Structures are given as structure tokens and as C-alpha cells.
Amino acid sequence: MKKSLGNYKKEFLGYLQKQRGYSPLTLKSYGATLQEAFDYIELEEKKSHTLFNLMPYRLHIAPLKAKTISKKLSAVRSFVEYLNLQGEKVVLDADASIKVPKTLPKPISHEHIMEALAKASLDEKVLVLMLYTLGLRISELASLELKDIQKEWVRVTGKGNKQRDVPLLGEMRALLDEYLSTFMIKKYLFEKNGKRLSENSLRYMITKVFERVSLKVTPHQLRHSYATALLNSGAPIVDVSELLGHASMATTQIYTKLGSALKQQNYQMAHPLCKDSR
Image (cartoon, rainbow, N blue to C red; front, side, top):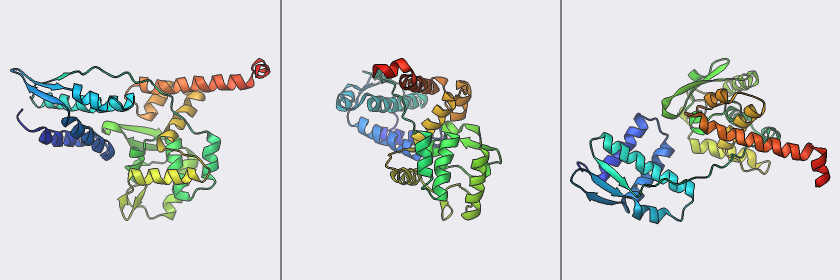
């Protein structure tokens, strides 16, 4: 190979940051995975290519959950694709994919969210409701600038620097106006001393809000709640997919399964024959 794996890794992470718009947290995860993989992958120089034997690494990570294994192997595959783009002819061996069972997200009920908001401060309310009423990723909210918030729309920059416009509810607009008139915000919606708050800081705030009502809630669950509420109220899946910024509608379809599960649960609770059988 023309360069060491370490040098290629550094260039690869820079590429993911600048060209693909990956978050610092994702870059850190990719970097750690690749460094781990380098300790186990066997490299063999062939006449026409370099062979990456993944088997030793797969044996090392075999005890992990299928979803974790799949993510780690995906990071290695992306790195190898990058190497090939750089003119290195690299072939993967023992690269069988992992079947990962699709799990239904766990949304938070509207009642529980309202209960938590009743005990929240102004900035906490804005944080929770921006996730719950716009379906944002925490990374998208952390990087949201004031210039991207209009009267009725919010322009969101998502994965791969792709932009989408999400409707802003009137009640949310009024809450934002109160928030902006209370706090001295210069650039980012959530900032301190002129610098944006980190994703971890916002996650911690969410944790504290819901701890007051004895719930453990993540920002992503609020995004799930947003999607599930829209679909259960009859919103077309194509519109929900666009609002969430999903690259593929297949990603959004998992929420339709959740909607069906909720309908089944409600049916079991409501139908008189079901009641009699309990």
C-alpha cells in the first residue's frame, strides 16, 4: 500500500467530516472501530490487490450484539471503499453480512411529555418541543442557527449536509419568541458564551427533564414520538419520510409497524369480546 493504514484512517475521517458531514460523535466511533480492527485484520499483499481478511476481527467481536457487529463491519467496509477510491486495490475476505432484526422504536406518550414539560424551565421546554414538534436529530438541533428559523418554517441541515424545511407550529413559534427575548442568543439556538452547546449537553438536559417524572428518555425517542404521532394520525408516509430527512422510505416504514402494534393493543383493550376473555 502507498501509505500506512493510520495515515489513510486520518484522511478517511477528514473525508467523512468535510464531504459527508458526519458528526463528531460518529467520527469518533468510526475512528475507534478502525483502530480496533487494525489490530486483528490480516493483510496479505497479492500481485493485483491487497487482501483484508476479516475473520480474526469477526471472531474478536463475535460476542457482541448483532447490531453492534453490523455497525463495526460497516465502518470497515466504508474505509475499504475509500481506499479503493484512492487507487488502492483492496479486497475483503470473510465479509458476510450480519442479519440484524429490526426493532420497533419506543416512543414516549404525549401525556408523559406534557407531564415533564409542566415541570420544565423555559429553555428545557424549547429543547423538548423542538425535538417533539419538528422530529429533529439531536445533532441537527445542536447545530441549528437562528438564521435558519423563520416564522413558519425551520431549515434543517441533516446527514450529508442535506437540507429540508420543516413546518413550525404557531405555539412553538410563540415559545421561541419568549425564549429569544429572555436569553441573549447570538448565533445558535442553544449556546453558551457565544459557542453552541454540545450534543452531550443537550442530551443531559433531556435526561434531567424526564427524571423529574421518573422516566428515562433519549432525544431520539422524542423523534420517534414525532414520527409515530404523525403516522397514527394519518399523515402519508412519504411526507413523514421527507420531514424526518430519511434517505430511504424503508427507514420510515418501521414506524408503520409500530402504528399497527398500537392499533392492535388499543383493539385488545377496547373490544368487548377481548374484555370478556381477560
